[in-house]
Image 1 (cartoon, one colour):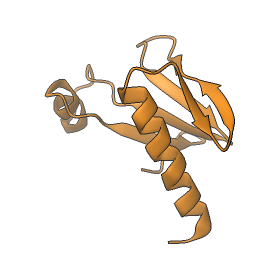
Image 2 (cartoon, one colour):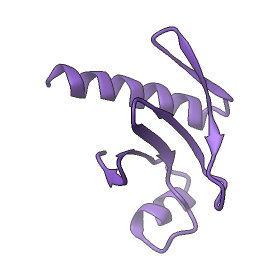
Image 3 (tube, helix red, strand yellow):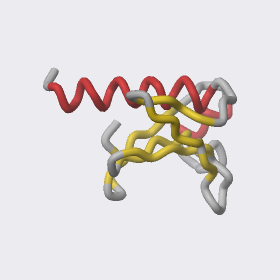
Image 4 (cartoon, one colour):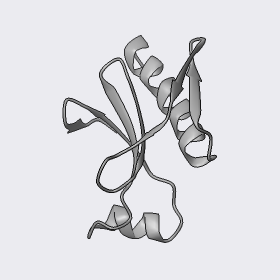
Length: 85
């Protein structure tokens, strides 16, 4: 795994932990970032260095949303409107 992907994976894991543990902020590399909510659906999200980490919308009509409704915790990593992980 290259260093960029390893760094992104570490940030995603920290974002995941913060989003799904009910915390209001995430600390990465000594900096604290407040978690925010999307304006329309109210989904929890966090952004850093052009990457967005956002929870799955359970109200969508797809398999990922169905899993979220069943209690699975799904986090999306996005950059520039594209899904990365």
